[in-house]
Length: 372
Image (cartoon, rainbow, N blue to C red; front, side):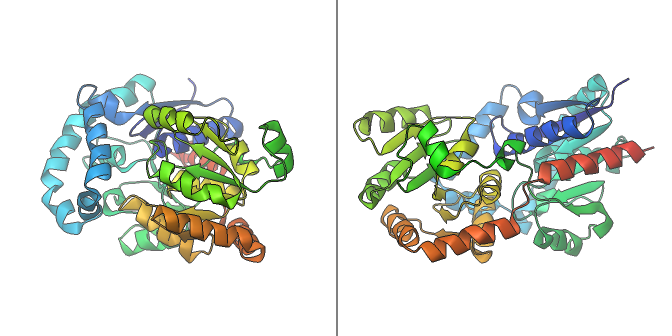
């Protein structure tokens, strides 16, 4: 019977799923005979309320970000909710164990903390014997990820490895791999050639704006403030169809603005760009690093994205500005300062780990191949 690896994440079309898909793609290259299965564990476990909770999460981020900032990685909140989370884990475990059994999984890979906590608890109770692998998809790790029952952590940086060790995880169970991104980001095409293929001016400065999978942030204001730069602007609205329609209508006569919705060609757009204005999601940031693309970070989500922003700024590959006018000013200053922009681009190549998906796949193979 073929070896089958089960990948679990939360929320389709999220960075967690993209990371899982990248590893699955890499695993087919490392071990072509193995099979992989990807599942949105939350929707699978709670088909009725799962989508509602996902929407509630987005509403909290939009309307009361300070609330999420308070909840995120708060030891008091973690302690106060432990019994409730243990109960939910028991409920989730019943369905998820059936999923493992149905697919006859040889290992479980979690790119989000919630399913990882479920199976860590099962291991603690002696009810799961196959390897459990946790893949951290941000440049910081929070307390909801930390379980001694995890057989292997694949982490983005040495900083995260040290954090886990301080929290009691054995160093032998941690591999610094980077954040897994699709192999398509390993390809590099000259900017002028990509711009021409996209019917853009091959020689004009190009700025790429991304608001994450949900098209979050004041993108319309940002476009207005960036237009005086005389750059051509690529705008990705993700899954936010309303924003796509609004921006497409508003800028339909502006030849220097190209509005796109959800696309699978982000790697080409990054090749075309000189600068990325973005929210600092772990996957998007890692993709930009692989492309050697400096960043201006705007309006990071409290919690994980705030920590990502701090890491990227500390590493010298990004600058931050939250108000639309400030974003335009910072972007203009960088685009006019070629040496500064070049140094940032060179620094991205120093810290980028574009082969992370392959590295994670190799670790999965070794761990599963040697499991009893």
